[in-house]
Image (tube, rainbow, N blue to C red):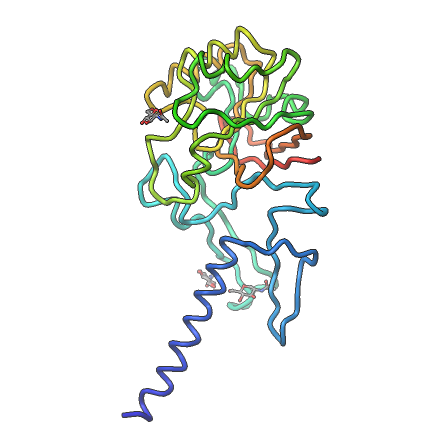
Length: 270
Ligand SMILES: *[C@@H]1O[C@H](CO)[C@@H](O)[C@H](O)[C@H]1NC(C)=O
Ligand SMILES: *[C@@H]1O[C@H](CO)[C@@H](O)[C@H](O)[C@H]1NC(C)=O
Ligand SMILES: *[C@@H]1O[C@H](CO)[C@@H](O)[C@H](O)[C@H]1NC(C)=O
């Protein structure tokens, strides 16, 4: 009996330690400097949220199977496959991916909610890199409301500020870390979007869940933002632990011809 149990026990320990390693890499806390460390004979990559002694914040979420999506309450699920692998004789590993374009940290183009803009070709490839890159303000919004005109007014964002990332209750609730899509997230109500368009110079609107628009005003708020084709929406930002204030934001996405949305990589630099 014990002869039979002991290899099983070893196996169990092995699989437990693999689980622990993958769990810690999904939620990294190490802010190490090396991209790779040796511990014994185990090669272990270090994943970082902050670089250059705190001057660079990665505000992009990792794309992971258990992240929330519009499409399902079960999370994103498998998005990566390895059809060619060194294990089955290939010279290199080559993976393939399949993703909804509005997955994780992503950008919306005007064609997302306007059929005639879509048909005319206003895809993510037409978005202005100057809007997506430059000085930006990270602000905290009141936690007890959606972003209404009244809330926008109370933020006193000065004229001339062109890029604002709005941190909300969504970050406190850790919504992007939960698999289930949560419709009670905080976003812009239609009057908040209108207030922003009419009273500020903001052209880049960033937010910390999968939509800038509150679920109850999903389409109306998007229409207000995207109608002028000047405002760019970046959604699903990872603003956890970043001090509010002024930064340089840098956002770049792949040039997906014909796509009305795309995953995007965003960083903040001090
Ligand atoms: C190669 O192996 C991977 C798993 O490593 C598998 O998913 C894939 O189907 C295999 N491809 C072929 C051509 O056998
Ligand atoms: C190639 O993929 C296999 C999985 O099939 C993995 O075990 C191996 O480490 C990969 N090789 C490299 C060089 O990444
Ligand atoms: C924001 O609006 C959503 C509906 O879109 C609602 O479920 C949620 O409770 C609101 N949040 C706050 C903080 O008022």
